[in-house]
Length: 177
Image (cartoon, rainbow, N blue to C red; front, side):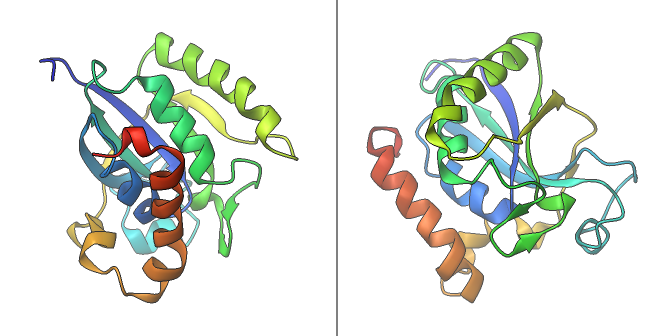
């Protein structure tokens, strides 16, 4: 492992799904659930779920680029959620569940646009993922952190999160820790 880490910030529906997948990705050293992209300072989960803050549920990944490239992180992202549905993932509906990439550098921005264009052939509908520079990060409440690992049998986890984790394991076996 190298001494250098980078940050990726992604929104693709409920943050529990993305968090569970990326916690298993080799080279990802830390994952936190949180909120980004809205106007209200210090939003709570209840405020974000109400849809009035403009924030998206996101994960903030720290990763070792010597082990996993930002491009690989994005390929996983575009595979484990549906980037063609505007402001929703499955039954989770609202702007807080939008598909979003918040970039931390011009290089990430260029890579995100390139990978999104390359992934367009995978989907039957246009990709609606927004790509924009990172904004203020708000860490979600403690009970949201590592949620799937703590509640694997909870209904949402069993029927929504677990299939995404299984898909990641099957499609990216070489990337699993």
